[in-house]
Length: 98
Image (cartoon, rainbow, N blue to C red; front, side, top):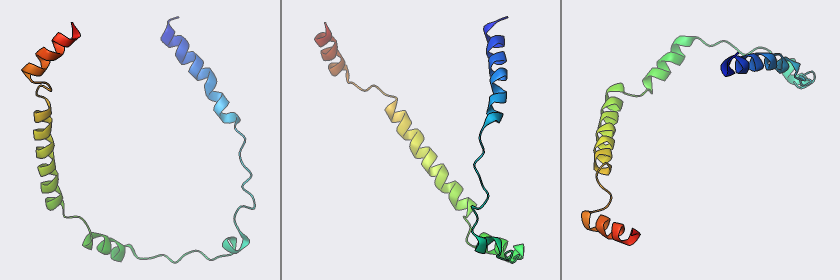
């Protein structure tokens, strides 16, 4: 039996332990006035969806803004890929390490 099989068997053996949890007492946690309250009124979905669409985000403008940001980040990454030290600084550092 290899290590992976033993590990799987151990994990499988520990799985039933998750069912041994003590559940909290939930009775009496809801105040009586909430238990006696009526159900909320149902609202038609069409006005809710219309309001959500009216204040929504313009996907074309969002895409243009994201494309611009991606281009700026890629340009910044390209600049950061270059050498950190100049040739003179690198030579000076190597001399100092000897």
